[in-house]
Image 1 (cartoon, rainbow, N blue to C red):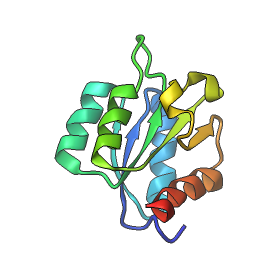
Image 2: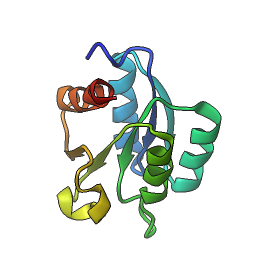
Image 3: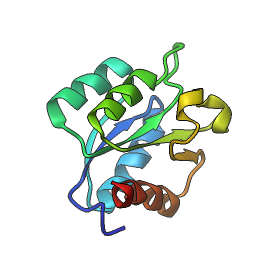
Length: 122
């Protein structure tokens, strides 16, 4: 997990308790947490102002909103991200089937390992 300390990680998650858990895990790993953002508008505003190094995106943000617009912006900018979802691969858009995904409930070590691998591939 040595790739994570000092990295700014955008967290997009609509469930406050899950968002806080993610933030705790990332801070314990030495990351700076950007957010959490509970919706697309906030996530895009944070992206514009904070320039994250990577992101963890919940797919379903409630109210019929998904994180797809955020994923598209991150991809265009070349910023790695992983999806965190309780819906499995079925929740992913066809174009995202190859993207890293962690299924909820997730454990801290697996989350950090997957996120760290994003930087290994970069």
